[in-house]
Length: 534
Ligand code: SGN
Ligand code: CA
Image 1 (cartoon, helix red, strand yellow):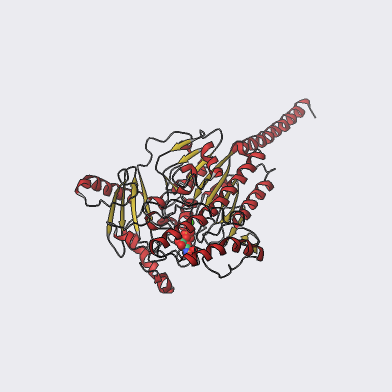
Image 2: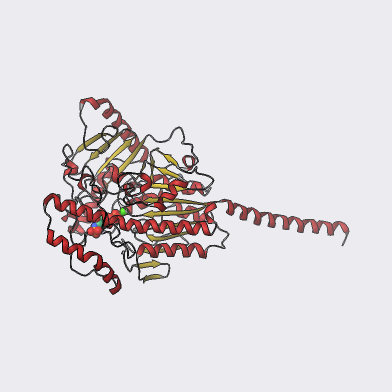
Protein backbone atom coordinates (compact mmCIF):
# COMPACT_ATOMS: atom_id res chain seq x y z
CA UNK A 1 0.00 0.00 0.00
CA UNK A 2 1.47 3.32 -0.96
CA UNK A 3 1.85 6.10 1.50
CA UNK A 4 -0.60 8.12 -0.58
CA UNK A 5 -3.30 5.44 -0.29
CA UNK A 6 -2.75 4.98 3.43
CA UNK A 7 -2.98 8.66 4.08
CA UNK A 8 -6.14 8.80 1.93
CA UNK A 9 -7.74 6.06 4.04
CA UNK A 10 -6.70 7.79 7.23
CA UNK A 11 -8.20 10.99 5.91
CA UNK A 12 -11.43 9.21 4.97
CA UNK A 13 -11.67 7.55 8.38
CA UNK A 14 -10.90 10.82 10.06
CA UNK A 15 -13.57 12.51 7.95
CA UNK A 16 -16.17 9.82 8.75
CA UNK A 17 -15.29 10.01 12.41
CA UNK A 18 -15.57 13.77 12.22
CA UNK A 19 -19.05 13.79 10.70
CA UNK A 20 -20.19 11.01 12.99
CA UNK A 21 -18.84 12.79 16.02
CA UNK A 22 -20.03 16.14 14.75
CA UNK A 23 -23.59 14.88 14.30
CA UNK A 24 -23.71 13.24 17.68
CA UNK A 25 -22.49 16.38 19.39
CA UNK A 26 -24.80 18.71 17.58
CA UNK A 27 -27.87 16.52 18.22
CA UNK A 28 -26.99 16.27 21.87
CA UNK A 29 -26.31 19.99 22.11
CA UNK A 30 -29.51 20.80 20.28
CA UNK A 31 -31.64 18.58 22.47
CA UNK A 32 -29.99 20.06 25.51
CA UNK A 33 -30.81 23.56 24.36
CA UNK A 34 -34.39 22.86 23.47
CA UNK A 35 -36.49 23.44 26.57
CA UNK A 36 -38.57 20.80 28.26
CA UNK A 37 -42.25 21.61 28.46
CA UNK A 38 -44.52 20.95 31.43
CA UNK A 39 -48.13 21.82 30.67
CA UNK A 40 -50.38 21.70 33.74
CA UNK A 41 -54.07 22.10 33.18
CA UNK A 42 -56.97 21.80 35.57
CA UNK A 43 -60.65 21.46 34.77
CA UNK A 44 -62.97 24.41 35.47
CA UNK A 45 -60.44 26.39 37.51
CA UNK A 46 -61.72 29.98 37.71
CA UNK A 47 -59.04 32.68 37.62
CA UNK A 48 -60.95 34.21 40.57
CA UNK A 49 -59.72 31.22 42.59
CA UNK A 50 -56.00 31.80 41.93
CA UNK A 51 -54.49 34.23 44.40
CA UNK A 52 -51.99 35.55 41.82
CA UNK A 53 -55.03 37.12 40.14
CA UNK A 54 -56.02 38.95 43.33
CA UNK A 55 -59.70 39.43 44.11
CA UNK A 56 -61.76 38.73 47.21
CA UNK A 57 -60.79 35.05 47.51
CA UNK A 58 -57.03 35.61 47.34
CA UNK A 59 -56.47 35.94 51.05
CA UNK A 60 -59.07 33.47 52.18
CA UNK A 61 -58.10 30.65 49.83
CA UNK A 62 -54.58 31.33 48.58
CA UNK A 63 -52.82 29.22 45.95
CA UNK A 64 -49.19 29.83 46.90
CA UNK A 65 -47.74 27.20 44.56
CA UNK A 66 -49.60 28.19 41.43
CA UNK A 67 -48.61 31.75 42.34
CA UNK A 68 -44.94 30.69 42.16
CA UNK A 69 -45.38 30.55 38.38
CA UNK A 70 -46.60 34.15 38.32
CA UNK A 71 -43.84 35.29 40.65
CA UNK A 72 -41.14 33.60 38.59
CA UNK A 73 -42.78 34.18 35.21
CA UNK A 74 -45.69 35.84 33.45
CA UNK A 75 -49.34 36.23 34.40
CA UNK A 76 -51.74 36.69 31.50
CA UNK A 77 -54.77 38.76 32.48
CA UNK A 78 -56.68 38.30 29.24
CA UNK A 79 -56.41 34.70 28.16
CA UNK A 80 -59.68 33.70 26.49
CA UNK A 81 -61.05 30.43 25.24
CA UNK A 82 -62.71 29.83 21.87
CA UNK A 83 -65.61 27.67 23.15
CA UNK A 84 -66.05 27.48 26.90
CA UNK A 85 -66.63 23.80 27.52
CA UNK A 86 -64.35 20.91 28.27
CA UNK A 87 -63.88 18.69 25.19
CA UNK A 88 -64.15 21.50 22.63
CA UNK A 89 -61.69 23.59 24.58
CA UNK A 90 -59.14 20.78 24.74
CA UNK A 91 -59.66 20.10 21.03
CA UNK A 92 -58.83 23.74 20.26
CA UNK A 93 -55.79 23.60 22.51
CA UNK A 94 -54.41 20.46 20.85
CA UNK A 95 -55.20 21.34 17.24
CA UNK A 96 -54.72 25.11 17.28
CA UNK A 97 -57.99 25.39 15.37
CA UNK A 98 -61.50 26.66 16.12
CA UNK A 99 -64.21 24.09 16.85
CA UNK A 100 -65.81 24.43 13.40
CA UNK A 101 -62.54 23.27 11.84
CA UNK A 102 -61.27 20.72 14.37
CA UNK A 103 -64.73 19.12 14.38
CA UNK A 104 -65.25 18.88 18.15
CA UNK A 105 -67.95 21.47 18.71
CA UNK A 106 -69.84 20.14 21.74
CA UNK A 107 -69.71 17.41 24.37
CA UNK A 108 -73.06 15.95 23.38
CA UNK A 109 -73.99 12.48 22.16
CA UNK A 110 -70.68 10.69 21.77
CA UNK A 111 -68.65 13.66 20.46
CA UNK A 112 -65.01 12.78 20.19
CA UNK A 113 -61.82 14.32 18.92
CA UNK A 114 -60.61 13.17 15.53
CA UNK A 115 -57.14 12.06 16.56
CA UNK A 116 -56.09 11.58 12.94
CA UNK A 117 -55.70 15.37 12.65
CA UNK A 118 -52.59 17.33 13.49
CA UNK A 119 -51.80 18.51 16.99
CA UNK A 120 -48.88 20.10 18.77
CA UNK A 121 -48.22 16.72 20.41
CA UNK A 122 -47.67 15.15 16.98
CA UNK A 123 -45.47 18.01 15.82
CA UNK A 124 -43.33 17.89 18.96
CA UNK A 125 -43.03 14.13 18.76
CA UNK A 126 -41.84 14.37 15.15
CA UNK A 127 -39.39 17.07 16.19
CA UNK A 128 -37.75 14.64 18.61
CA UNK A 129 -39.59 15.42 21.84
CA UNK A 130 -40.68 12.66 24.19
CA UNK A 131 -44.38 13.35 24.72
CA UNK A 132 -46.70 12.26 27.54
CA UNK A 133 -50.17 13.02 28.86
CA UNK A 134 -51.36 12.06 32.32
CA UNK A 135 -54.83 12.74 33.76
CA UNK A 136 -58.06 13.99 32.24
CA UNK A 137 -58.28 14.37 28.47
CA UNK A 138 -62.01 14.00 27.88
CA UNK A 139 -61.62 13.76 24.14
CA UNK A 140 -62.75 10.17 23.52
CA UNK A 141 -60.73 7.84 21.30
CA UNK A 142 -57.12 6.82 21.70
CA UNK A 143 -54.65 9.71 21.99
CA UNK A 144 -52.15 10.04 19.17
CA UNK A 145 -48.90 12.00 19.25
CA UNK A 146 -47.92 10.67 22.68
CA UNK A 147 -45.12 8.29 23.56
CA UNK A 148 -46.90 7.68 26.83
CA UNK A 149 -50.46 8.21 28.03
CA UNK A 150 -52.19 7.36 31.28
CA UNK A 151 -55.59 8.99 31.26
CA UNK A 152 -58.98 8.95 32.96
CA UNK A 153 -61.91 7.63 30.95
CA UNK A 154 -64.40 10.46 30.25
CA UNK A 155 -64.81 12.80 33.22
CA UNK A 156 -62.96 10.45 35.56
CA UNK A 157 -63.64 10.08 39.29
CA UNK A 158 -62.30 11.99 42.28
CA UNK A 159 -61.72 8.90 44.44
CA UNK A 160 -60.34 5.50 43.42
CA UNK A 161 -60.20 6.25 39.69
CA UNK A 162 -59.96 4.02 36.66
CA UNK A 163 -57.10 4.86 34.29
CA UNK A 164 -56.39 3.88 30.71
CA UNK A 165 -52.85 3.52 29.46
CA UNK A 166 -51.32 1.87 26.41
CA UNK A 167 -51.90 -1.54 27.98
CA UNK A 168 -55.55 -1.07 28.87
CA UNK A 169 -57.85 -0.13 31.73
CA UNK A 170 -57.07 -0.55 35.43
CA UNK A 171 -58.20 0.83 38.79
CA UNK A 172 -56.28 2.64 41.51
CA UNK A 173 -57.05 3.46 45.11
CA UNK A 174 -56.62 7.01 46.34
CA UNK A 175 -57.41 10.61 45.50
CA UNK A 176 -57.16 11.35 41.79
CA UNK A 177 -55.37 14.72 42.06
CA UNK A 178 -52.64 13.08 44.15
CA UNK A 179 -52.42 10.02 41.89
CA UNK A 180 -52.02 12.18 38.77
CA UNK A 181 -49.24 14.13 40.48
CA UNK A 182 -47.36 10.98 41.53
CA UNK A 183 -47.72 9.50 38.06
CA UNK A 184 -46.33 12.67 36.46
CA UNK A 185 -43.34 12.83 38.80
CA UNK A 186 -42.68 9.11 38.29
CA UNK A 187 -42.73 9.60 34.54
CA UNK A 188 -40.29 12.52 34.81
CA UNK A 189 -38.05 10.42 37.04
CA UNK A 190 -38.07 7.58 34.50
CA UNK A 191 -37.01 10.04 31.78
CA UNK A 192 -34.17 11.51 33.82
CA UNK A 193 -31.37 9.97 31.80
CA UNK A 194 -33.00 10.55 28.43
CA UNK A 195 -31.20 12.70 25.89
CA UNK A 196 -34.50 13.79 24.38
CA UNK A 197 -36.29 16.92 25.57
CA UNK A 198 -39.79 16.19 26.86
CA UNK A 199 -43.29 17.64 26.79
CA UNK A 200 -45.49 16.34 29.58
CA UNK A 201 -49.09 17.31 30.21
CA UNK A 202 -50.37 16.93 33.77
CA UNK A 203 -54.07 17.51 33.23
CA UNK A 204 -56.14 17.39 36.42
CA UNK A 205 -59.74 16.37 36.79
CA UNK A 206 -60.24 18.76 39.69
CA UNK A 207 -61.98 21.09 40.45
CA UNK A 208 -64.82 19.86 38.16
CA UNK A 209 -68.35 19.38 39.51
CA UNK A 210 -69.27 17.74 41.94
CA UNK A 211 -66.27 19.17 43.83
CA UNK A 212 -65.17 16.30 46.09
CA UNK A 213 -62.30 17.43 48.32
CA UNK A 214 -59.44 15.04 48.98
CA UNK A 215 -58.71 13.31 52.29
CA UNK A 216 -56.01 15.86 53.08
CA UNK A 217 -58.21 18.88 52.42
CA UNK A 218 -61.55 17.70 53.84
CA UNK A 219 -63.08 20.41 55.98
CA UNK A 220 -60.22 22.87 55.54
CA UNK A 221 -62.55 25.82 54.87
CA UNK A 222 -65.31 24.96 57.35
CA UNK A 223 -64.46 27.99 59.46
CA UNK A 224 -64.15 30.38 56.55
CA UNK A 225 -67.00 32.53 55.27
CA UNK A 226 -66.53 33.64 51.69
CA UNK A 227 -67.87 37.01 50.54
CA UNK A 228 -70.84 36.70 48.21
CA UNK A 229 -70.33 38.15 44.73
CA UNK A 230 -72.30 41.33 44.03
CA UNK A 231 -74.31 39.62 41.31
CA UNK A 232 -75.27 36.47 43.25
CA UNK A 233 -78.90 37.61 43.03
CA UNK A 234 -78.70 38.99 39.47
CA UNK A 235 -82.13 39.71 37.94
CA UNK A 236 -80.83 39.48 34.32
CA UNK A 237 -82.55 42.72 33.45
CA UNK A 238 -81.76 43.62 29.78
CA UNK A 239 -80.39 40.10 29.10
CA UNK A 240 -83.02 37.68 27.81
CA UNK A 241 -80.67 34.81 26.99
CA UNK A 242 -79.01 34.95 30.40
CA UNK A 243 -82.39 34.94 32.11
CA UNK A 244 -83.24 31.62 30.46
CA UNK A 245 -80.35 29.71 31.99
CA UNK A 246 -80.30 26.49 33.90
CA UNK A 247 -77.12 26.83 35.90
CA UNK A 248 -78.05 28.90 38.91
CA UNK A 249 -76.92 28.03 42.38
CA UNK A 250 -80.51 28.69 43.48
CA UNK A 251 -82.28 26.29 41.10
CA UNK A 252 -79.80 23.90 39.55
CA UNK A 253 -77.21 23.15 42.18
CA UNK A 254 -78.35 20.03 43.96
CA UNK A 255 -78.27 20.06 47.71
CA UNK A 256 -77.54 16.32 47.91
CA UNK A 257 -75.54 15.39 44.81
CA UNK A 258 -73.56 18.64 44.50
CA UNK A 259 -73.41 19.83 48.08
CA UNK A 260 -73.33 16.46 49.85
CA UNK A 261 -76.22 17.23 52.21
CA UNK A 262 -77.42 13.66 52.41
CA UNK A 263 -77.15 10.61 54.61
CA UNK A 264 -76.72 8.34 51.62
CA UNK A 265 -73.23 6.80 51.78
CA UNK A 266 -70.92 7.92 48.97
CA UNK A 267 -70.52 5.37 46.21
CA UNK A 268 -67.10 4.06 45.25
CA UNK A 269 -65.29 5.11 48.45
CA UNK A 270 -63.35 2.72 50.70
CA UNK A 271 -64.45 2.33 54.31
CA UNK A 272 -61.62 4.49 55.57
CA UNK A 273 -62.40 7.19 53.05
CA UNK A 274 -66.07 7.06 54.03
CA UNK A 275 -65.25 7.36 57.70
CA UNK A 276 -63.07 10.40 57.11
CA UNK A 277 -65.67 11.95 54.84
CA UNK A 278 -68.58 11.40 57.19
CA UNK A 279 -66.68 12.83 60.13
CA UNK A 280 -66.66 16.16 58.27
CA UNK A 281 -69.98 16.13 56.41
CA UNK A 282 -72.41 14.47 58.84
CA UNK A 283 -72.31 17.29 61.44
CA UNK A 284 -72.77 19.87 58.65
CA UNK A 285 -75.72 17.92 57.30
CA UNK A 286 -77.32 17.64 60.74
CA UNK A 287 -76.97 21.36 61.35
CA UNK A 288 -78.41 22.06 57.89
CA UNK A 289 -81.46 19.93 58.63
CA UNK A 290 -81.96 21.64 61.94
CA UNK A 291 -81.70 25.16 60.54
CA UNK A 292 -83.53 24.29 57.32
CA UNK A 293 -82.71 27.55 55.48
CA UNK A 294 -85.08 28.72 52.73
CA UNK A 295 -85.22 31.43 50.05
CA UNK A 296 -82.19 33.73 49.94
CA UNK A 297 -80.77 32.07 53.06
CA UNK A 298 -80.73 28.78 51.24
CA UNK A 299 -78.88 30.33 48.29
CA UNK A 300 -76.34 31.81 50.70
CA UNK A 301 -75.94 28.46 52.42
CA UNK A 302 -75.44 26.73 49.06
CA UNK A 303 -72.92 29.36 47.98
CA UNK A 304 -70.78 28.81 51.10
CA UNK A 305 -70.90 25.01 50.72
CA UNK A 306 -70.03 25.29 47.03
CA UNK A 307 -67.05 27.56 47.75
CA UNK A 308 -65.77 25.39 50.61
CA UNK A 309 -65.77 22.24 48.48
CA UNK A 310 -64.59 23.83 45.23
CA UNK A 311 -61.70 25.68 46.89
CA UNK A 312 -60.66 22.61 48.88
CA UNK A 313 -60.37 20.71 45.57
CA UNK A 314 -58.17 23.54 44.31
CA UNK A 315 -55.99 23.38 47.41
CA UNK A 316 -55.05 19.83 46.33
CA UNK A 317 -54.30 21.04 42.81
CA UNK A 318 -52.13 23.80 44.25
CA UNK A 319 -50.26 21.26 46.35
CA UNK A 320 -49.76 19.16 43.23
CA UNK A 321 -48.22 22.12 41.41
CA UNK A 322 -45.92 22.70 44.39
CA UNK A 323 -44.75 19.09 44.39
CA UNK A 324 -44.06 19.17 40.68
CA UNK A 325 -42.16 22.46 40.88
CA UNK A 326 -40.14 21.12 43.83
CA UNK A 327 -39.30 18.02 41.85
CA UNK A 328 -38.13 20.08 38.87
CA UNK A 329 -35.95 22.14 41.18
CA UNK A 330 -34.42 19.21 43.04
CA UNK A 331 -33.62 17.41 39.80
CA UNK A 332 -32.14 20.54 38.21
CA UNK A 333 -34.68 20.30 35.40
CA UNK A 334 -36.16 23.67 36.33
CA UNK A 335 -33.39 25.58 34.58
CA UNK A 336 -34.40 24.48 31.12
CA UNK A 337 -38.11 23.84 31.52
CA UNK A 338 -41.04 26.03 30.62
CA UNK A 339 -43.99 25.46 32.95
CA UNK A 340 -47.47 26.45 31.87
CA UNK A 341 -50.56 26.51 34.08
CA UNK A 342 -54.03 26.92 32.65
CA UNK A 343 -57.58 25.58 32.81
CA UNK A 344 -59.81 24.26 30.03
CA UNK A 345 -61.99 27.33 30.72
CA UNK A 346 -63.06 29.65 33.47
CA UNK A 347 -65.99 29.12 35.83
CA UNK A 348 -68.64 31.07 37.72
CA UNK A 349 -68.20 31.32 41.45
CA UNK A 350 -71.66 32.75 42.09
CA UNK A 351 -71.35 35.68 39.64
CA UNK A 352 -74.76 36.19 37.97
CA UNK A 353 -76.04 33.60 40.45
CA UNK A 354 -74.21 30.84 38.56
CA UNK A 355 -71.79 27.98 38.64
CA UNK A 356 -70.55 26.25 35.41
CA UNK A 357 -69.21 27.97 32.28
CA UNK A 358 -70.25 28.12 28.55
CA UNK A 359 -71.19 31.83 28.34
CA UNK A 360 -69.08 34.45 26.62
CA UNK A 361 -69.18 36.56 29.77
CA UNK A 362 -65.89 37.18 31.49
CA UNK A 363 -65.77 34.48 34.17
CA UNK A 364 -66.13 31.62 31.70
CA UNK A 365 -64.56 33.26 28.64
CA UNK A 366 -61.34 34.04 30.45
CA UNK A 367 -59.13 31.26 31.69
CA UNK A 368 -56.03 31.44 33.89
CA UNK A 369 -52.67 31.41 32.14
CA UNK A 370 -49.40 31.55 34.07
CA UNK A 371 -46.06 30.68 32.50
CA UNK A 372 -42.62 30.44 34.00
CA UNK A 373 -39.42 29.94 32.00
CA UNK A 374 -36.24 30.88 33.80
CA UNK A 375 -33.86 33.00 31.77
CA UNK A 376 -36.47 33.76 29.12
CA UNK A 377 -39.52 35.26 30.85
CA UNK A 378 -38.89 38.16 33.15
CA UNK A 379 -39.95 37.21 36.65
CA UNK A 380 -43.16 38.83 37.88
CA UNK A 381 -44.27 40.12 34.49
CA UNK A 382 -47.92 40.79 33.74
CA UNK A 383 -49.44 40.77 30.27
CA UNK A 384 -52.73 42.37 29.21
CA UNK A 385 -52.82 41.40 25.52
CA UNK A 386 -55.81 39.48 24.15
CA UNK A 387 -54.42 35.96 24.03
CA UNK A 388 -56.31 32.75 23.44
CA UNK A 389 -56.20 29.03 24.01
CA UNK A 390 -56.14 28.98 20.20
CA UNK A 391 -52.53 30.16 20.59
CA UNK A 392 -51.34 27.31 22.81
CA UNK A 393 -50.47 24.84 20.03
CA UNK A 394 -48.48 27.40 18.05
CA UNK A 395 -46.72 28.54 21.19
CA UNK A 396 -45.58 25.07 22.24
CA UNK A 397 -44.36 24.31 18.73
CA UNK A 398 -42.51 27.61 18.55
CA UNK A 399 -40.97 27.11 22.00
CA UNK A 400 -39.67 23.75 20.78
CA UNK A 401 -38.19 25.39 17.68
CA UNK A 402 -40.34 23.29 15.34
CA UNK A 403 -42.33 24.42 12.33
CA UNK A 404 -45.81 25.86 13.02
CA UNK A 405 -48.40 24.26 10.75
CA UNK A 406 -50.12 26.40 8.16
CA UNK A 407 -53.57 25.10 9.19
CA UNK A 408 -53.22 26.34 12.77
CA UNK A 409 -55.24 29.50 13.43
CA UNK A 410 -53.65 31.05 16.51
CA UNK A 411 -50.47 33.03 17.07
CA UNK A 412 -47.35 31.98 18.93
CA UNK A 413 -47.04 33.67 22.32
CA UNK A 414 -43.26 33.30 22.23
CA UNK A 415 -42.57 36.99 21.44
CA UNK A 416 -44.93 38.00 24.24
CA UNK A 417 -43.22 35.63 26.66
CA UNK A 418 -39.97 37.35 25.72
CA UNK A 419 -41.57 40.69 26.56
CA UNK A 420 -42.29 41.93 23.06
CA UNK A 421 -45.85 41.99 21.83
CA UNK A 422 -45.90 42.10 18.02
CA UNK A 423 -47.23 45.43 16.71
CA UNK A 424 -50.01 43.69 14.79
CA UNK A 425 -51.23 41.55 17.71
CA UNK A 426 -54.99 40.79 17.65
CA UNK A 427 -57.28 43.57 18.82
CA UNK A 428 -60.37 41.36 19.01
CA UNK A 429 -60.99 37.77 20.07
CA UNK A 430 -63.58 35.55 18.40
CA UNK A 431 -65.73 33.10 20.38
CA UNK A 432 -68.37 30.51 19.43
CA UNK A 433 -70.41 28.22 21.72
CA UNK A 434 -72.70 25.50 20.29
CA UNK A 435 -73.98 23.03 22.87
CA UNK A 436 -77.73 23.71 22.94
CA UNK A 437 -80.31 22.47 23.76
CA UNK A 438 -78.43 20.71 26.51
CA UNK A 439 -77.55 20.66 30.19
CA UNK A 440 -77.59 24.21 31.67
CA UNK A 441 -79.56 25.55 28.69
CA UNK A 442 -77.03 28.07 27.46
CA UNK A 443 -78.06 29.25 24.00
CA UNK A 444 -75.84 29.06 20.99
CA UNK A 445 -73.87 32.25 20.59
CA UNK A 446 -70.83 33.79 19.00
CA UNK A 447 -69.17 37.17 19.27
CA UNK A 448 -66.06 39.24 19.78
CA UNK A 449 -64.26 40.79 22.70
CA UNK A 450 -61.97 43.78 22.37
CA UNK A 451 -60.09 45.63 25.07
CA UNK A 452 -63.11 47.81 25.65
CA UNK A 453 -66.22 46.09 24.36
CA UNK A 454 -67.99 42.79 23.91
CA UNK A 455 -70.53 42.03 21.19
CA UNK A 456 -72.52 38.79 21.39
CA UNK A 457 -75.10 37.23 19.08
CA UNK A 458 -77.41 34.58 20.56
CA UNK A 459 -79.11 32.52 17.84
CA UNK A 460 -81.06 29.33 17.10
CA UNK A 461 -84.23 29.67 19.20
CA UNK A 462 -83.60 33.35 19.86
CA UNK A 463 -82.10 36.19 17.82
CA UNK A 464 -80.60 38.56 20.36
CA UNK A 465 -77.62 40.84 20.38
CA UNK A 466 -75.78 42.06 23.46
CA UNK A 467 -73.19 44.79 23.77
CA UNK A 468 -71.14 45.56 26.88
CA UNK A 469 -68.95 48.52 27.69
CA UNK A 470 -66.30 46.61 29.63
CA UNK A 471 -64.70 49.72 31.12
CA UNK A 472 -67.92 51.16 32.52
CA UNK A 473 -69.57 47.84 33.20
CA UNK A 474 -66.94 45.20 34.06
CA UNK A 475 -69.58 42.93 35.60
CA UNK A 476 -71.44 42.81 32.27
CA UNK A 477 -74.89 43.53 33.59
CA UNK A 478 -75.96 46.45 31.37
CA UNK A 479 -76.62 45.36 27.82
CA UNK A 480 -76.31 48.54 25.74
CA UNK A 481 -77.09 47.04 22.34
CA UNK A 482 -79.13 49.54 20.30
CA UNK A 483 -78.46 52.30 22.81
CA UNK A 484 -77.96 55.37 20.51
CA UNK A 485 -74.95 56.44 22.59
CA UNK A 486 -73.14 53.34 21.31
CA UNK A 487 -74.32 53.44 17.68
CA UNK A 488 -70.84 54.02 16.21
CA UNK A 489 -69.17 51.50 18.46
CA UNK A 490 -71.85 48.95 17.62
CA UNK A 491 -71.45 49.45 13.87
CA UNK A 492 -67.68 49.17 14.15
CA UNK A 493 -67.90 45.98 16.23
CA UNK A 494 -70.22 44.39 13.67
CA UNK A 495 -67.65 45.05 10.97
CA UNK A 496 -64.88 43.60 13.11
CA UNK A 497 -66.98 40.55 13.95
CA UNK A 498 -67.66 39.83 10.27
CA UNK A 499 -63.97 40.26 9.45
CA UNK A 500 -63.01 37.72 12.09
CA UNK A 501 -65.65 35.22 11.05
CA UNK A 502 -64.29 35.46 7.53
CA UNK A 503 -60.69 35.20 8.67
CA UNK A 504 -61.38 32.03 10.67
CA UNK A 505 -63.78 30.52 8.13
CA UNK A 506 -66.90 30.54 10.31
CA UNK A 507 -70.34 31.39 8.87
CA UNK A 508 -74.13 30.87 9.05
CA UNK A 509 -74.06 27.90 6.69
CA UNK A 510 -71.77 26.06 9.04
CA UNK A 511 -74.06 27.02 11.94
CA UNK A 512 -76.98 25.41 10.12
CA UNK A 513 -74.94 22.30 9.36
CA UNK A 514 -74.04 21.92 13.04
CA UNK A 515 -77.66 22.50 14.09
CA UNK A 516 -78.81 19.78 11.66
CA UNK A 517 -76.21 17.37 12.96
CA UNK A 518 -77.23 18.19 16.51
CA UNK A 519 -80.89 17.42 15.72
CA UNK A 520 -79.79 13.95 14.69
CA UNK A 521 -78.09 13.48 18.05
CA UNK A 522 -81.23 14.69 19.86
CA UNK A 523 -83.37 12.24 17.85
CA UNK A 524 -81.06 9.43 18.89
CA UNK A 525 -81.14 10.56 22.53
CA UNK A 526 -84.24 12.62 23.42
CA UNK A 527 -82.92 13.08 26.95
CA UNK A 528 -80.64 15.81 25.60
CA UNK A 529 -83.68 18.06 25.32
CA UNK A 530 -84.76 17.35 28.85
CA UNK A 531 -82.85 20.41 30.02
CA UNK A 532 -85.37 23.20 30.17
CA UNK A 533 -85.10 26.79 31.30
CA UNK A 534 -85.94 27.57 34.87
C1 SGN B 1 -71.38 17.37 33.56
C2 SGN B 1 -71.84 18.33 34.64
C3 SGN B 1 -72.21 19.69 34.08
C4 SGN B 1 -71.11 20.21 33.20
C5 SGN B 1 -70.80 19.20 32.13
C6 SGN B 1 -69.73 19.63 31.18
N1 SGN B 1 -72.99 17.78 35.33
O1 SGN B 1 -72.43 16.99 32.74
O2 SGN B 1 -72.51 20.56 35.13
O3 SGN B 1 -71.47 21.43 32.62
O4 SGN B 1 -70.38 17.99 32.76
O5 SGN B 1 -68.52 19.76 31.85
S1 SGN B 1 -72.75 16.67 36.45
O6 SGN B 1 -73.95 16.72 37.31
O7 SGN B 1 -72.64 15.40 35.78
O8 SGN B 1 -71.55 16.99 37.20
S2 SGN B 1 -67.24 19.52 31.03
O9 SGN B 1 -66.12 19.75 31.92
O10 SGN B 1 -67.27 18.18 30.54
O11 SGN B 1 -67.28 20.49 29.97
CA1 CA C 1 -63.96 21.95 32.04
